[in-house]
Length: 470
Image 1 (cartoon, rainbow, N blue to C red):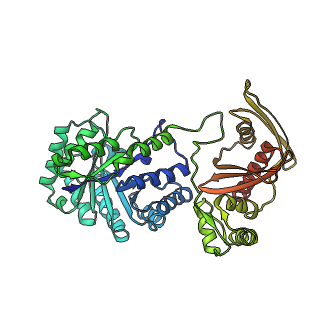
Image 2 (cartoon, rainbow, N blue to C red):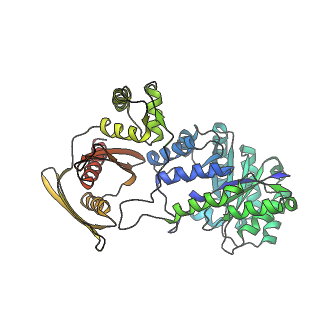
Image 3 (cartoon, rainbow, N blue to C red):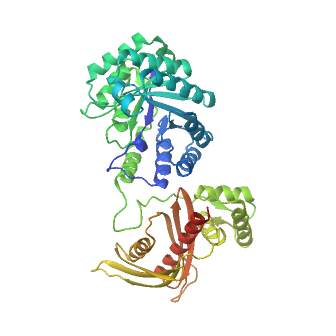
């Protein structure tokens, strides 16, 4: 029985129906890895610092699946992408090139001969760095057949191990796609030495049927999505192969027993975008309950846990955090991940206060919308913001966003009790993400809303200081 590889493209999809934060992309990658998909596809690197950090974070989080990232048709993109991806346990570089006349001319601005040369050079560069390379022939079903065959032969000769053909327009019926796959094998005998993948658009609601037609006639890899917008459905593929595997002489390794729970979780993250009336994003929080440190852990162990929490600490800040950790660990049996968050917020990157809180007024109740009026001072100038929110914290953070004119991804929000009794002090940890990097702030007050505002401003000042000193 042939093994069919499943390559998930959920995070490559774009559109108004999908909105994912940095942290959610890492969470989805972990879920897909747990589900047993063979390949997890990521978006290309466009902003070097942010996207490279995203790729590195996913590469570190995924244990079993291949992590695939596309490159542009130039050497600079190949090197940049490989630098971010090379630490993955199973890396894959993808070379996507348009092979239809319209897309070659208007998207890539290349003539056929120039496109073949670009395919050859880019695939060769990728194959020299990574043993798993995939050539993706975009819009293959609308290409000139002779050119498509040349492009596939060129990619295989240059070192591609997987060749994927795309029905980008989604205009083919299953019998037409069957004929298309058969003609590929007949005209490019070299395909028998590599894996043939297919990607089908669902414009005619035929993507799943076309994928199974391709499986029946030799395709070994299917691009599918756990939460699909215009692709093959991952749950459908796994279900049909589980029930009709003997008919297709094919099987996949996706764990169908966990399918509904995991795909429901992924769908919730994809659908639940940030509310216009809340500074909080989708609310995904990593479970760190089983992570802890003891006095016996050294600097590298502490920094490793800090990196798991999203921090990219400098050598100086790492030393400060470790010194603070040692002081506390000497009196405690163990230090939890949440407590390490507080240590980082208190010890790392202490900077001058660009923004200072002057005052705040918050009103809330069970019959009225929460409102917040926040006044801050920057460079001696008083700034104020007034906002409605889903709750008092929401309203206060939105008022701060109004003052700064910036929205940062709220990576985490923690409230902890410091003392007990009616006058108890509350400690709040706020983690903001900017350009892919996490900045944490700490606030302490008998007023939990006040401690939250102070923590937000503390993290904000770290971001502003780093942005303005770079």
